[in-house]
Length: 227
Image 1 (tube, rainbow, N blue to C red):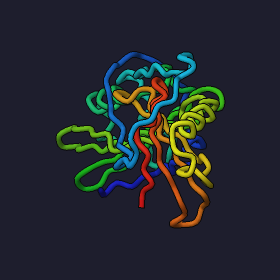
Image 2 (cartoon, rainbow, N blue to C red):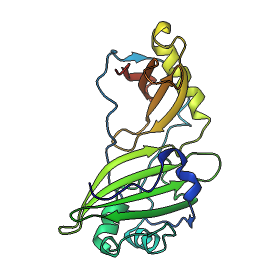
Image 3 (cartoon, rainbow, N blue to C red):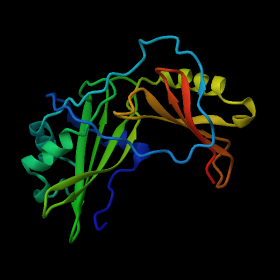
């Protein structure tokens, strides 16, 4: 990939500068899978439906095109990406946790000899984290591919509930000495599923466990200790 990523995922919120605007463009975009599961699904009852997400795609092609053209990132967005077709393909894959526009969002991209990259990051109002969408684009054909997501724009008070579901569903020894260090929500078709990262420390090779929780059912769908 000749293009380079301009946005560090752990700090994307610092670059959000464009005010949100709305317009429906429904679609779906699957997230990348966590990896092989080494646990059979377990179940913990779900005690409240009020915290379940209703994701949506609140942006139109015109919204995305305006954000690309108004980008304040160094280099902005290459002219060859600022087309209605590219903007429409991107807009239909920009899901937000509750279907509402972000409070702030921005876009930036780069092009190499054959392909281009485009990152779109947005942050909801309040204390929620930042959502990041990364796209790969073939400027010759206009094909737009969702290359990855890093979605943290959900209410932060959900993290404690998700942690409780995971700890209630898994054997205690699997999470012994591990702390929850990160949560990502997953877009449709995996609505109400969250990826939880458990770690024992920052050193390389330390114990870890990645868990996928279905909040609607209270199930642990996957638990992967990795390598």
